[in-house]
Length: 107
Image (tube, rainbow, N blue to C red):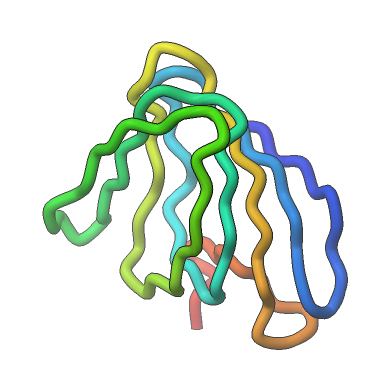
């Protein structure tokens, strides 16, 4: 997984993430609203750590949309045959917030 911070200030974080085919993201929760734009990809899966049913959906270049906070621990997995790259703008609730904390950092 490659993560690149494009902008990070008190109000927002803009980040590029790339997952190789078959590669998962780290387990995390989502604390704030975000807007995502797919730069490249074919198919993405969302898995939940608690074992509840996940989701799998096709993606394409330019696909974009809003996502709300998700308190369940989950991760994205690139199940397509090409690298998956997205640019996400996280709208922070407060300065210094980690918008996608790992489970060991969740209070």
